[in-house]
Each structure stands twice: as structure tokens, then as C-alpha cells.
Image 1: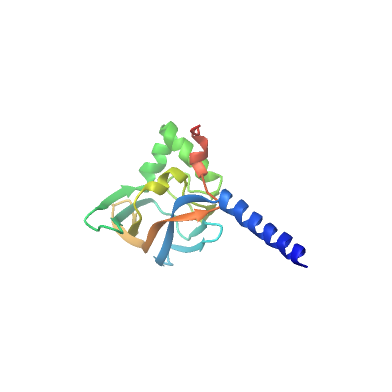
Image 2: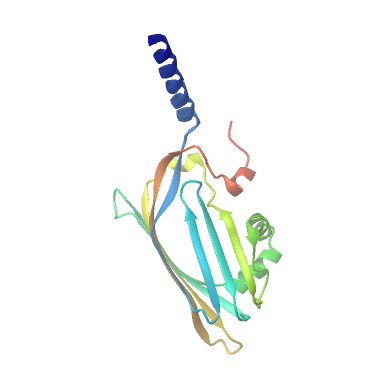
Length: 200
């Protein structure tokens, strides 16, 4: 009986060691609060997160053709250990110009081709009625980034539709808070970083 117990304990220890060897440290975001608002006269959206096999599923139904679209982004990132170190950004970009850049730039084309593997993307403006989505997508991860300081983040994104006279109509407004912390994981999501040469 003692021998069987020893064999069982040895197997358990072996399994734990194998799991520990396979685990890698990565900086991975955890979402604390996600508030999504859309004007249902123009668009409806759904966003889901899976923290175990980390990925985001994002779906948008465009109910009326969108001639032009501005995205306003406010972002802040603050170190957890010392809040005197932070980064903030406040910018407005035009989605249609970004889509045009995709067609003119090898880098833009590479990013678009990579993202297209995850769904049905908007290709150009005006944006026709239809359903667009990106599923099973996650931010590219690399263990080398685990040396960075852990942070809290806040992200506010609003979308304004522009008509032919450049009149702006708010059609989406999102507020996301969370933290990026170092975690031991066995499922590193390298994403587009897998295309880069690996050291060693």
C-alpha cells in the first residue's frame, strides 16, 4: 500500500513539475469594467471576453450605411507601484483614412491581413449595411514583456458618424478599465509577434 501511495505521489509531483516547466510569464490584461453603448438606430454591437483561453469576440451590425467615421480615443496607463509614472493620450482619427492607408502601406496591409484571419472586417468607406466581426482575437504576447512594470489602464472610445456636410453624430461610446499584470500561463498568445525571428 505504501508503495502505491509513493508511486501516486511521484506521479502527482511529476505532473506539477511538467506544468511548471511549461508555464511562461507574460504581461496580460484583466478587464475590471467594460461599458459599451451604441445608438441602435445606426449600429448594434456585442463584446465578450474569455479569460481562460484569452480572446475577445467583437461583433458590430451596421444598420444604416455610414458615409464617414471619426474615432475619438482617450487612454491612460499608470504604474501600479508609483503613480507618478504614467502615459496618457487623447486623439481623434478618421477610420476611412486608416482604411485607405491599409491599401497604400505594406505595414498596413500586413496588419489588415493578420486581423482578417479572425473575422469579417470593414474594407472601405462608405461602410455598407452588414455584420462585421473579429472573433477569437487576443493582443500579441511575448514573455520578454513580463519585465515591464504592472499598470492600471483606462480607455474611452467614441465613434462619430460624419455626413456629407461633416455634421457629427455620436453612434458609439465605450468605457473600459482594467490592469495589466504579470501572470504564469501555459497558453502564450504570440499572434503577429510569431512572425518575428525568435532569439536563440
